Image 1: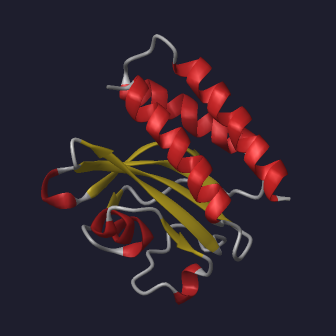
Image 2: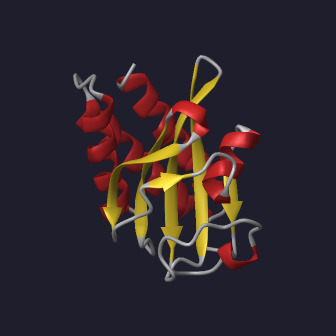
Length: 155
């Protein structure tokens, strides 16, 4: 299964790189990348971006799925934990995650990849699933590569 999932992420990365070629706009690239992930990954109920604003608050960016929380307070929830830790955070059971922010009651697990530029977190790539324990280390590595491609294309 891991080989199949790794192959899926290799394909998604190639698709993401292709769709972002020659496009320097971070919002346009985030919108297309959210779409690529939404249609390319199974068992998701939300995928999108939040961007860091003054005071560390995260503001909703392009996404796919149900309407989402517009503002996430600094340091709160899975997104805030990823920003604070400056690393990918996987929550296999969001109900058990301290300080989890419920934007969609159908979400059971979540993965958040911080977007780093010049040692500063400029936002996060956030994916939710209605399946418990949906995300693992293969997802983390694949999504980190996709996030790095977004950062490179949107530089």
